[in-house]
Image 1 (cartoon, rainbow, N blue to C red):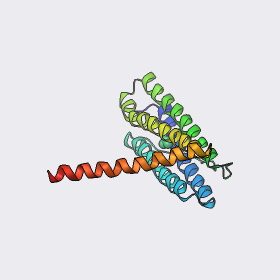
Image 2 (cartoon, rainbow, N blue to C red):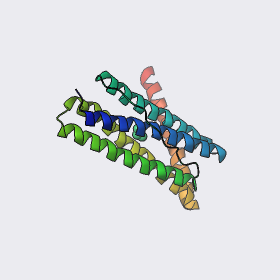
Image 3 (tube, helix red, strand yellow):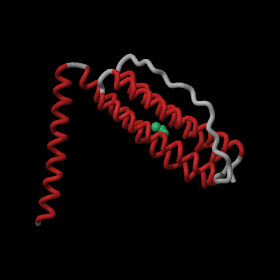
Length: 178
Ligand code: FEO
């Protein structure tokens, strides 16, 4: 049995996840206009993930016999200074979402709601991954844009990564043959 306060806070999180999906979808549109198809695809896929986060929470609220409620979702920004700005904003947004998830988890402990506490652990782990993901993208973009030697370093790193993947495939193939 969820407390009214917890239902309200979970619904708030439903709407935040919905906003996250809209934010990343809007960012993908900006990237498309700048001919950054790779970034656009990444952000579109991430928008889909955020919708899954939203649905997961939505179902949980319903499963506990409460009503999941979709509120008004504000429009995301449409203008960005650069692709670094786009990913900087995704990172800052994810840090904000982490704080909100942490507040929710804290509330479950205050209310001794261990079932919801357990349910939210998936989001805790997910936020760690997402912060790491977006932060590493910013670092990679900075490597490319901050100077020609860094750019070479990045390209070299990519080439080695491709070689590592090829090598792994070869090792697997050999293991099957032996
Ligand atoms: Fe659903 Fe990116 O947090």
